[in-house]
Length: 246
Image (tube, rainbow, N blue to C red; front, top):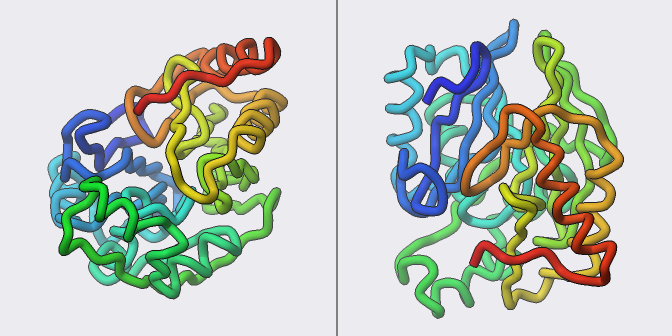
């Protein structure tokens, strides 16, 4: 799905646009002057669908060079191994995400509990994937005409990172599961889902300036994207919790 001149949605499941496998998160691709840059990888249940969408949008698979992961949950990082194998791309993550993904640690992403609860098929397995670049929180990476800043945003998971991408003079918040359209979040009964950390991360995001919100599920906003963070902050300021999309 071609969104803007340099931006594509190439994966999205049942909690989004039903573009690819139903378990996929929203997978975004930026075209830079040195090749394509993916954000998140989907679940990997049928990663070929993501490649098919890229080709349908006229993208050259051989020019997709990088993959950044917001966190290690299966719907965001389970497809990293497949995409890395097919595209020979470099995978980027912050330290804890890199540790989980590179070892395929299913316990760390609460996958056994999710399988037992029927959230994933009983035969689904999380494949380990090598991570080429491990970035410190706050690090800024330049890839051609893109700049990418890693913002630590724990709460949805202990390893969660959002990315502030500047491209062609516009600023995009790739928010993963830190914040969604309408100022919503995800509350779930996992060991590392934290109300205080979620709220603090949202308040941290409110200190940044950005035009577009590219969330990990549901819709995205190409203009006035910060209003979704501000909506959540207004609830937090009244000692409340943003509503969950689940």
